[in-house]
Amino acid sequence: MTHDTALGKVLVDSKGMTVYTYDEDGPGQSHCYGLCAAFWPPVAAPAQQAGHDGFTVIARDGGALQWAYRGKPLYTYAQDDKPGDVSGDGADGVWHAAKP
Image 1 (cartoon, rainbow, N blue to C red):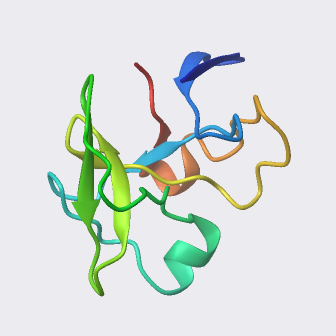
Image 2: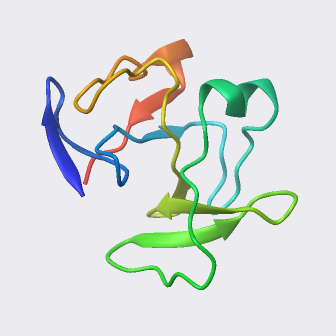
Image 3: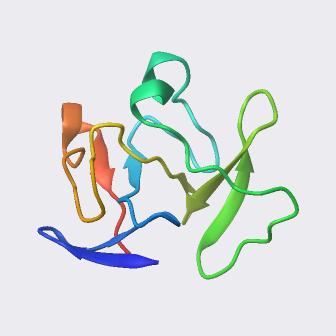
């Protein structure tokens, strides 16, 4: 799904919250764990879910499943309060709101 924001259209999770990508991730590989994942929760994918339209499901260390878009794992930002917030965009120069 997408939502119109101050940045234009961005991808959102099932609650309408902006999702982000992390420059340190590799294709289909998350590098955000521990404290990072506390601030940037991975967008969980249900078991047995098939990808579509550029979305895929990747396995995180430990076996949890996470959504990815065009190979980039997706995260929400703990400091976004409501749908349409994009306060994580540009954080530390490595976090970016995911765009379709």
